[in-house]
Length: 78
Image (cartoon, rainbow, N blue to C red):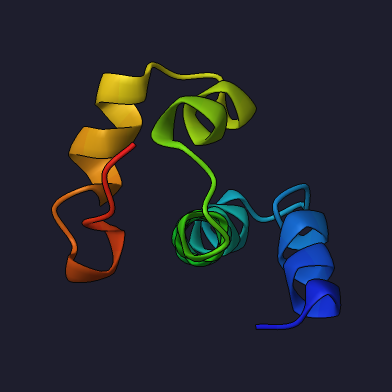
């Protein structure tokens, strides 16, 4: 999904119809989760540590490793 699609979804969350806004919120959340996973994978591929990634996400190293560490592409050790 492109950035302009994310922008449109974000704008749709403040519409007059709460059902439409809820649907947009669900889609936006899915897209942001996908984007986060892509960026974590990119960071690991570039050699960034779990500690640094966790700091960028504002969560613990254990939390980020638990969420993304079990995936084959993230098996690099610090």
